Image (tube, rainbow, N blue to C red):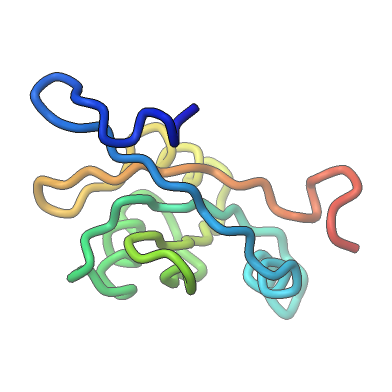
Length: 121
């Protein structure tokens, strides 16, 4: 449905939608866990301006809660993966959104693979 809305005029602007490519399962598993196998809480930031670096994303997200890691998506420009140490921080980020100047990014929570029934072993 979102892909059909891409480019549609809405309240003086245009709706911008994109879909994320599925990442290699092994890279997702490594991203979701640390060496000590602690569970962390990932979110995906969509619509991050191209001039924003991983350090800036981490700094902004650290205002919400402790960040374990932040990195750009390998296949989609303007998308960052952020791992929060606490579940509450991931929830707050998805509810509040994350902003870089006048641009507010859409934040989507992702369930860690250990918590998904039948997830990656």
